[in-house]
Length: 239
Image (cartoon, rainbow, N blue to C red; front, side, top):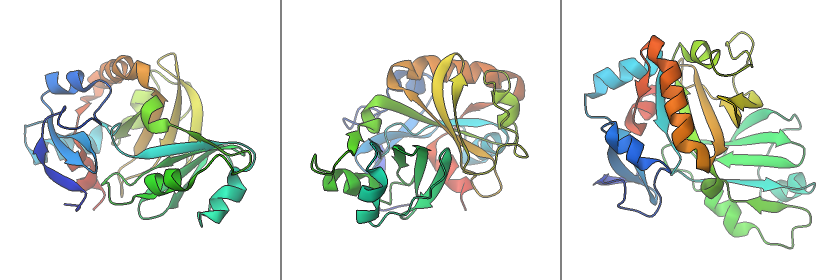
């Protein structure tokens, strides 16, 4: 367990929590404090059952975890000053820091996802370093404005085919590719980020639609036996 992960707590033990934490509570989630946030850690029916589900089709809410974003034509210059290497290609995610991910949406827009175990403070460091004197580089409060789900398992692309027009099959959508598209009639960002040999996708969209999207994804998962899984299970897939 990471030093950033602390003893079990309720969903409201910290100010940082899932936007739709009541949905998670109703599903049987237990919570643990990771960095400064309460995250759904498990769903109470045993690690073995959750891991099996996540390997086939699982959904985890990572919304409370650290992330940030930046827009503007001077992003590349500013990130270089922060010693962060991000490639030239857009719609591509670049591993950086100690488990973080820099998702380049356009030449002038980047989303930084912190390490899912809470061990890399990169998003916080970047936000602390940013000032309004960095030219055309503006901070975007992604942690407050966007939910963050992770879909895992071998049936992920089958599920997405029901609610998204992009072909997300592994042969068509490479690891660390990004799609800015519509999911269940809502604008969303999808980032492929496999966990070892298990296909996995981050999905980010407007925080106001968190509960709606959660329910839509669970509905689309039903025929494949998909279900919610906790961060503990997601981290186990990384090993």
